[in-house]
Length: 191
Image (cartoon, rainbow, N blue to C red):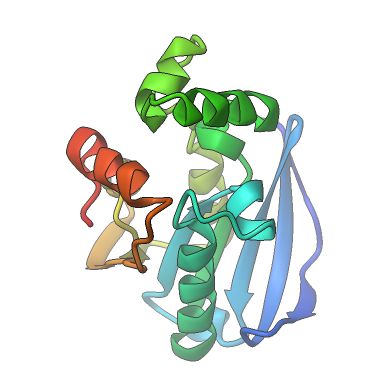
C-alpha cells in the first residue's frame, strides 16, 4: 500500500465540530472524521461507514446508509470517537455498476443476486485502509458501531480489541425492507 495522507483540518457540521484527515490509496480517497476530543480517548466509538452516494448524498430510501451515517455522526459528536468514511461505493463495485445493480433490483433481484449477476462477489470491499488508519491514529481498542459481522471480524483480525458493539439500527421503510431483510438473512447483519 502506498498511502498519501492529508494534514488534519477542522470541519464544523450540522452534527457537531469534527477534525478530518484524508487518506489516498490508489484511486480511492478515504476520510477519518474525528470528534474534537478524539485524541484524549482510550477507547473511541468507531463507525466504519461504507460510501453510498445514492443514500448519503441523495437520501435514497432504498437503503439505510444515510440514516446510519447521520446516527453515527450525531453519536460520535456527543460521545467522542471516529467515523471512517470508507470510499468503496456499492460494496466496492463502483457507482456505475451499483446503478446497474439497482436496475436488476427493480426487476426483482435482491442486492446479492444483482451483484453476482453483474459478475461480482456479494461484497467486494477491501478493508486494508482501515488497518492503516487505525495504526496511523494509534487505535488499539474500539467500541464499534456496526451491524455487519464482516466488519467485526476484520477489526478483530487486525488485532484491535472490540470492547463493545453498538447497533446502528434505523427505521425500515417500504423501499428498504427487502434490502435489509436480505442483509440480515444472507449476510448475517444484526438487524
